[in-house]
Length: 234
Ligand SMILES: Nc1ncnc2c1ncn2[C@@H]1O[C@H](COP(=O)(O)OP(=O)(O)O)[C@@H](O)[C@H]1O
Ligand SMILES: [Mg+2]
Image (cartoon, rainbow, N blue to C red):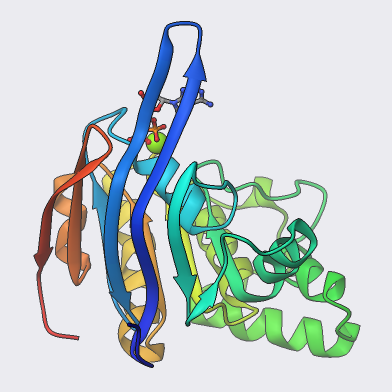
């Protein structure tokens, strides 16, 4: 049973990949409940299934078997069209390579999704500005990605992801291309979003020091959960 505090519930989630060598059990029967307002780090060695799990949780891939509900909505069997609409309107993503459009300003990169959702340009620009302020880039909206540092680019990507006020923010190794100092700036932003706005965040990382920013650490090994540690009270 789920209740209104539950954001994510997965049961026996499994993802097999068929390859020339046979079947890879990338995710091997994972069950987990994530509450609203948690900041989760998914940790584990390379190949342990972190990205596979994040992609399934983010509705970017489907499990071979298992159950998955977000806010009590069964999302495994949603038709593809509804899944994409759900992704666009309800979920935010940050990837390690920022995925910004180089020809567009920071502000345009943030508000383009909102335009795609059918919002007016005026409303989109104002929401984008608010999101950029929340990641500490309120004064850099006019710059193009080339005029920003790696950490600033990643914060623009975070602003883009949060501008729609997503139910869940997903990040796959968001600091993989950043040095320690800029990683701290990005992680500080995640922490503030989580603590100030109650943003639910699921972040994949393999850096142990990143866990001091989060509220709970899930550890994967060979596609199974081998650790689940709460770090602070939400
Ligand atoms: N598209 C794919 N086809 C076949 N095997 C895959 C594919 N994606 C991932 N794998 C395998 O699944 C396992 C988990 O991969 P992944 O989820 O990317 O791990 P991590 O993100 O923890 O490094 C690995 O053994 C990997 O080689
Ligand atoms: Mg990965």
